[in-house]
Length: 112
Image (cartoon, rainbow, N blue to C red; front, side, top):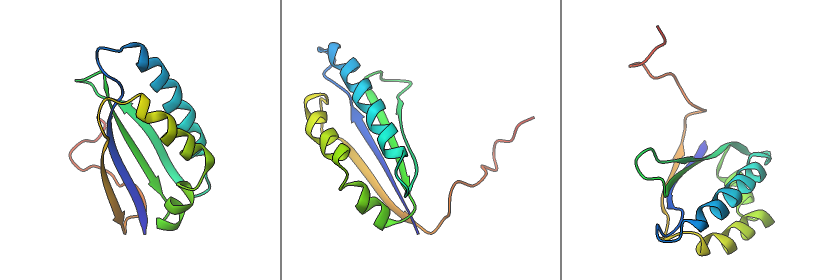
């Protein structure tokens, strides 16, 4: 069973654009660390196309045990210690345990 987490973060108060560079550096460092974990299938942040202050984080782990190991890493603590000073709202999260073993093809769109 694979574990997938999708979260949405507002990177900073729009009145404090200086915080976005700090957020981008933190997110980049954190993503590199998480992607190096044995149980990590993927981990990435993506910036919204409609709101430059909003980021979506998508992460996938081989199973719930890998996710539990992930949250015990020192760089996760560091991220959770620093991030509250860089976000303007509490992140929203979707947590899914799925029997699927990865992404599958989307039937509606195929290359021409």
